[in-house]
Image (cartoon, rainbow, N blue to C red; front, side):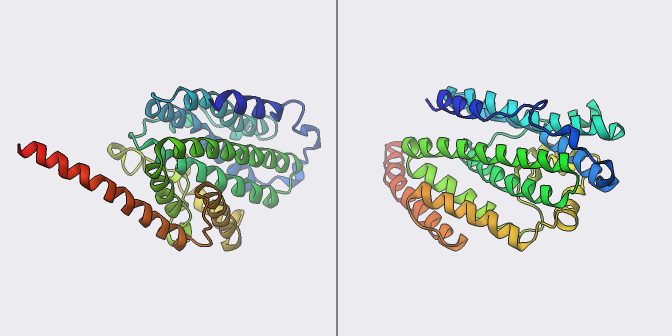
Length: 293
């Protein structure tokens, strides 16, 4: 099991909201109304760990190890929402999200393949680490800078934990896991080709609720994410390249094969998919023969 070891590792570096956040350094002159509004939106977005955890537990009922790890991930992600709300409570109380605003992002996600979901959230942690690092640079108020730097480190550690479960899945499922991880890796590393930010909170997850079936679509300001990325923290091509490089680097380590570009990862995906299809063909033929008899 991975859970006991991961618990110890994350417990050893867990930060205290009271002791490790430099609340006393707050400088009101360095926090604009525009910046404070983005903190509110991020606080609500982080609350979406709640429905994500419900999804993970539902879709991984056969995996008690990973489900147990969710207790750590869920705690730390909800703590992210809490520390952002605490910042607002102390310094901009009129912007603290209401319970109704928080509850709006709790809705059921459609069932999805567990391996693909795991890879999607691994990439999401990488992306969020970079978003928060950039947010820390954009802000000038010292306390919120420290908070975003703290959250960024958490997201990086979560990505590392997911990677451990991905390695375990490859040992267990072989090419099925490789194909799933490569498929989602190609998608999540191709954000420059899409009109929207590729992150789990910005993807459609419940067909019956479309188009209000993304986390971002259920925020008080559904358009805030694109504004935050493009106009405020200016998550430009340089930063997007850093995300892609981290995804490709980790895929190279995971697959024990170097991927210098998304195109190379996509070629690998096609190779593994073809291999799976060739292995399945004799079984399908045998099944058809028995059915005919």
